[in-house]
Image 1: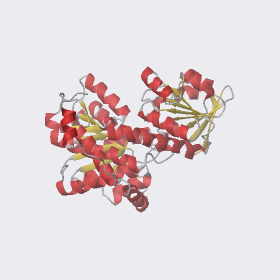
Image 2 (image 1 turned 90 degrees about the vertical axis):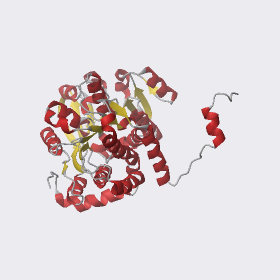
Image 3 (image 1 turned 90 degrees about the horizontal axis):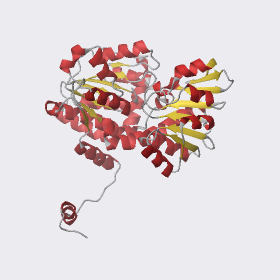
Image 4 (image 1 turned 120 degrees about the horizontal axis):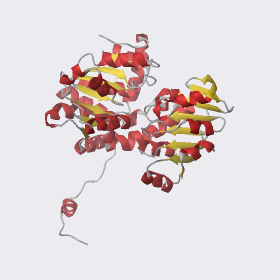
Length: 418
């Protein structure tokens, strides 16, 4: 079996962590049980380019249980848990290509290795596999029947491809599922981002000015958790509706040019590029801490920060301090990459349970329905979303009410007015 991991001897340690995560992933466990019986992915070649974590490991194991030939690579050079990668290769015999801290050349070499089996289904977190196949490996397009995409950044890229009529196969946007973005983005990103910042810096959050760039679901979650720790939260936005919502939620809203002068912590979660630019870094006060939780590090204009600096020093693992020419110091976390994975362990498994249930069922849907789908980006079918919510409640031991026949009739009629 082909694989490339840091140290295969870490496999037993990784297996313990995978099992620990699985204990709080009841939805994926129930799906795996059905997959083992029905084999809906039998003989399907699946390339998954995702963060190689304990939660992703349980998804890969579930896909294999469904009959898939799975190959896994990392969607971010700093998010890999090396012991988990080793465990997947050694204990689960899933070809895995991921090493924490790998350079750009190795990163793309690993993606090439993961698509070597000519995937029929792609599974992305950032659309790197889809992008590579469409640009440099067009010879593989004839094999691909469809794909799934995990995150906002990837969906933006895929919708752009679809709008320009260059997307060559259908893709399910897992990110748009309510059981994904309402929970993973808000509660998962909220907790894990704060976790990464605190682990990396050991700085006190309460009493600080905490700047959140972007008030989408991820931004809402980060702002909520920072406020819960006692921070004075400032939100920056370009969307007037989201900005108004942030105000109504009790946060200060202002342009980044103003926030840069007062912030102690900065987190970007927009999905765009150069959200914090040179003029913002130059305005920051001494000791400002800057991070990104919006997938790609392009949200921060790091070249501009380097140009403004006269000195840089790695002061803690994952914390690089830039001394600007004006004498002030700005610390960058995790090279500007996803701080929750670069300096922590990513989302809690109970949240990723729903996200990866969407991935598993999305792949099953692609296999069953690809002939009826156009070369577009599709939302997760509502029936799948609702089933995942139902299974999650079952796993939590929670029951909900059901409509009576009279209530169903009332909701379906127009004759019964006030």
